[in-house]
Length: 118
Image (cartoon, rainbow, N blue to C red; front, top):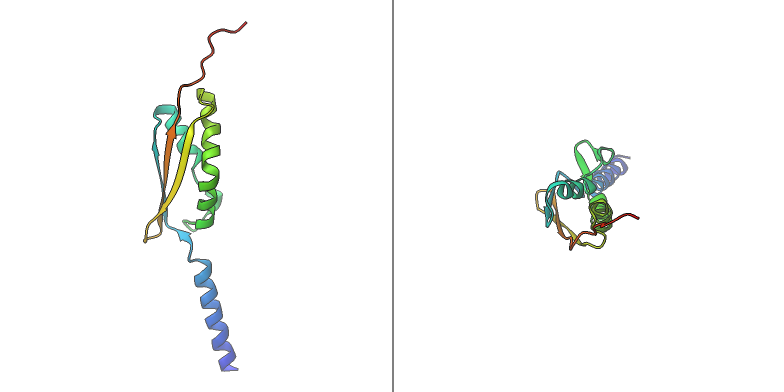
């Protein structure tokens, strides 16, 4: 009986360690290539929703998903500024301490301008 309880405790401890191995302590967003309102829009496109933060940690899998979806999200938020085909890269870097940083590079090109409305 005691041996069964010891094995169960080991399995529970191992499982809990596995489940929480990929938690994130902090996330930073570094954006290069845009300024002003465009910069703010790009930062907001990659913000982590409060719904995804539990006990001040974020699951690493959500960050990887954000890394994959980031370029499309950023392209969409730049459209109101006239940038319809920007070149966007999003890279997620991890540190040993559990902190992460999104490195975002945007090459907007020339914005589309409306000269006249008929």
